[in-house]
Image 1: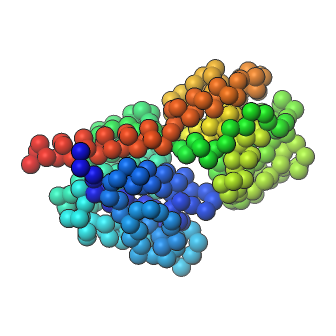
Image 2: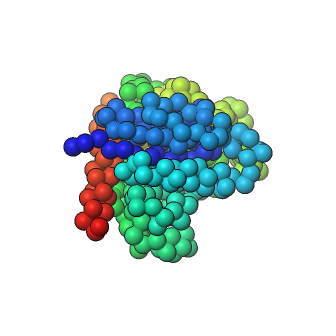
Length: 346
């Protein structure tokens, strides 16, 4: 089949790929590079400090996370999307990666070129109700759980995230610590991770950027001995910390549509202890790559089951299930399905 011509519109909060945190930008980069490697013609609409083998279209030198003068951020996102739509006749399809919400919907009736959107959060009922103003606009969900939340919208496909499993080095042995890696928010469960670590008497490393929630709610629990704050980690540091952990703690309090840190930890051979929220059961093979618990009490009482899982089996499963190749296959099939459906209705 002929190669596709795709405008891939990234968030412009930071570079693609991100220097440190930024899961949406990381996924955008992996998909872009994977599509280019398959011979597709990709134009990446992202910040000027991005690195890509695609054709880079940049109207900003850097992202608004790094420049307070770039305000309001919504306008910067909208103008980046508009830059792709203004060149719509050059592309078979425009794919918008929504960092916060799919403002791409507002452009979907303004061009005959299909616009597809991927959102990276668990949308509320109020958000979905608003988006149903555009019931024909195709979404690509990142999990069955997210597809369920997108009820009433056109979910054209479900494509789970992939990770560069070759870069997440397998660690057959671990040091004697637990790991919490993610943003410091109530929904991520850092306080619950601390509770579990204290109850089982193990060291816990907290790896995330300093935020107000950390200073107001978490910092008082950090003693530098059992509960240790590491800070935000770059990629190499993150991989090293994953590989050294006995287990990743994922006591999320609010359901998430995927849980990228789960796949990343497992690719390093590190099993996970997770609460049964959102898409956790789609990512974690219970009893193989981790254990899914109903409550924090159950997690603390059953953590030994996690620590005794076969790290090699954890790694093998993650490498098979969450490869970039598998993700790219899913998106190419989704793109071609959207284009075929559009052609039938012309």
